[in-house]
Length: 88
Image (cartoon, rainbow, N blue to C red; front, side, top):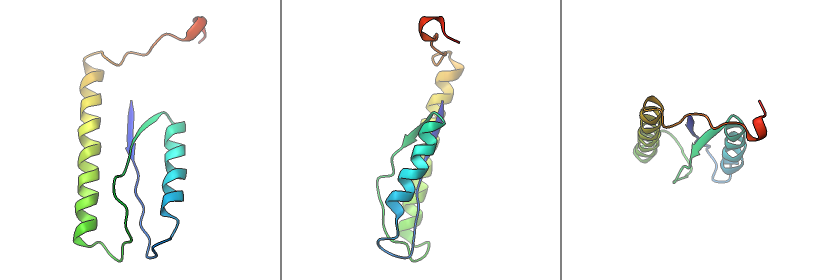
């Protein structure tokens, strides 16, 4: 029931942001997280207005999904499934 999102920035256009996000997301998947994709990427020279809008939007989306999962958990809709073949 974990929800996560990632983003990176660099001062260069080809600064390895995509590879960094893939590596971060692989770790989050390994931990059982549902990773919300980031829908925009760009070079950041500083925290300009566009970057702040994107960051706030991504954070708000993460909060909405986490809230829905929390409500579902409280309602008992996310009970753990039994292990296959009676395995622990």
